[in-house]
Length: 139
Image 1 (tube, rainbow, N blue to C red):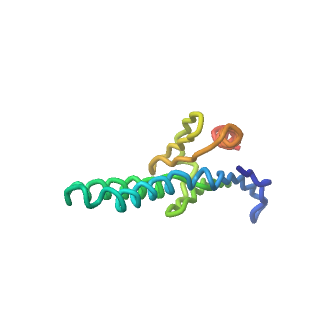
Image 2 (tube, helix red, strand yellow):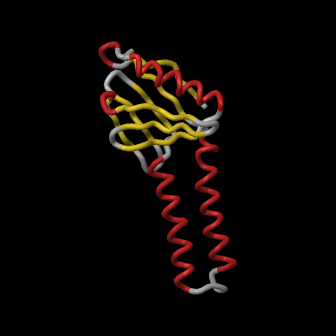
Image 3 (cartoon, rainbow, N blue to C red):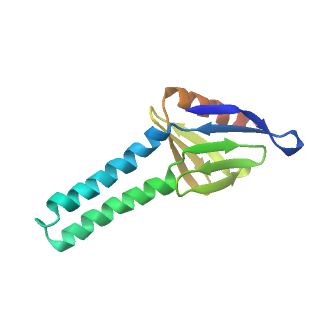
C-alpha cells in the first residue's frame, strides 16, 4: 500500500493517490486461472462436454468481472475520482460520488456509474477512509 504525497496539478490543485498492494490484487486472478488450468488438465476428459463449457465459462465470467470491477489505484483531484485497474480506467465526477462501504479487506466505492471495489489491508482501509471523508466535507 502506498499513499503518495499530494501532487500539485496545474492551477495549484492537489491530487491524492492510493495504490493498492499489487500481490493482494493479483492473488484472486491467479487462483481462478489455476483452477481453470487444473480443471482442463485433470477433469476435462472425465466430464460431459456441456459441463466443461459451463464450468470454464463461469470461471472466465468471474475472472472478467473481477478485472473490470476491482481497482488497483485510486486518485482524487478537485474535479473527480479516477479508478484504475487492469482492464478498468474510469473517471467519476465528484457530483456522482455517493459513498463508501468498508469491511476488513474490501472497500466498495458507490457512485452513480456503478460500484468499484478495492482490496485493502487495515492501513489502506484507514487511508481510503480519510481520503473519502475529506471528499464528503467538500475539501
